[in-house]
Image (cartoon, rainbow, N blue to C red):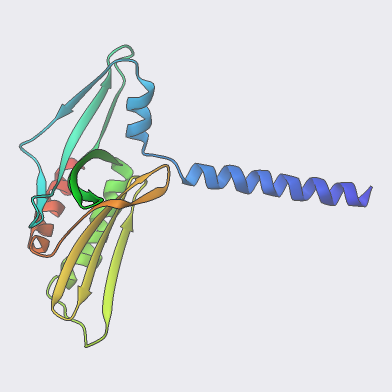
Amino acid sequence: MKFNRILISILLLLIGSKSYSQKEKTNSETRKFIDNAEITQINKDWNVKAEFKSGLGEIVTFFPVEAIDLKSNNKIKSLQMDMSVIYQIAGRNFNYFKSSWIDLNEVDEFILFIEQYVIPNLKDKTERKQSITYIFNSREITFSFYIEKSTRRISIYLKDNGNTDNEHYFWTESQVSKIPELLTILKEIN
């Protein structure tokens, strides 16, 4: 009898932790909204955008969007990020494109991250053999700001259901000075 209670308790804990971990590894509310609508309209404001380019011609663009379920007329606003990068397979270059979304509640956190940890450190340097990395995680992207000596770099990785895509990512050192433009865009969305 006591063994059965312990076994049931353990099973309930396992089920609870399994469902909690599954909730944490979901895509954005915007992606779910678009995926669940039969007919969707997405309005993009290209006047309000922040863009980062790499020396290879890769590009990441952040801009506000509004998605509308045309059957129910429900709407959701968010930040869309389009990423176009180049990757290699067997010595051949291929283009990779993907859109990801940052929900409005995550935009607030992204603003705090940039204001408190990135902007104040844009001119920082580290000592020899030291580095600092600041990382922001949303449901669909990871944005990192890296400092080593006088080098500063941003890297953006995409996620799908909580899994980071380490094969298709964007990084740049030459565009770090454009981070204040991204902050301006983020504040316009809110």
